[in-house]
Image (spheres, rainbow, N blue to C red):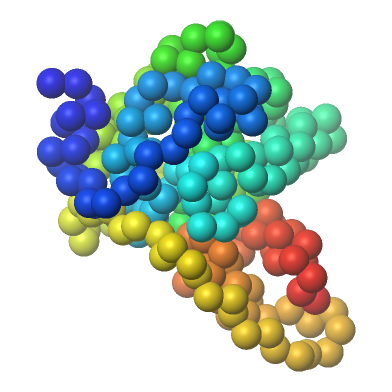
Length: 225
């Protein structure tokens, strides 16, 4: 069996998913995509593995987790700024990194798009949320998912108890509700409100601890203050 078959057996995909128009998606992105990712996205649809690991999807319910939305470009710009300004080391050329997933801790997953015309040979990198640590998996996103969900591979940036509740996939809500806005003094920020907004817009955000800067930026860009 292939890695995708093994993944389906380990974590059965939900029923009733809608396939994407991959020719249109690739035209929009201006690049080809890995075959395994397209199979993965068509089988599972938008959502999260173990309530933690999500991949960007062209049919995502919000632009914040849309493969063709604004987030991949914004994240790559931030990486370039980090590299140029020496804020954090970036072990790969930011222009060769394409953001394609996010975790509940705010870590981002990237394709290392080398060579650009051979997507089935791309490897996967994981970056610590606004931090210096990186992890590289010498294989596809399906290989990484299978290795992590089966317990064969441990990613240091992922929580140790990731598999404690079992292996499962939870589809995204098709139409997440717009969270209520709360009036507060200018300049003050409510962590609870930001978390509520982020989850309603497709982000996986931890219940405690630091909220990733990218989520705060998105919250502000949506007109919140």
